[in-house]
Amino acid sequence: MDPLSLAIAGALAAGIATGAGESTGAALPALWRRVRERFAGRAVVPESEDEIASALDEEFTRDPSFRQQCETLWNQAASGGVANSFHGQAKNVVQTREIHGGLTME
Image: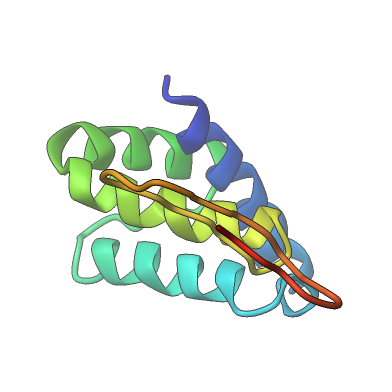
């Protein structure tokens, strides 16, 4: 099973049970909304950790863009709301959360 499916399922199942999520900023609630939207209207909505993981695994296989969206939100939640992503070519790339003071690139 996809490790991302398992990680998200564990966090979502724990959040559902405890009402957690507010302390993680907007990313985890946004991830939960995205997953809930994906499964809305289905006869059986996954609720347990195992059900969520299995359903996510199937969706990730069927729709790689959904997996990428969930992975981005997961990374934001895990990093306290900061996600750095770079695609393409560049002379210099800086990925940072906070800079206090100056930054000079030449």
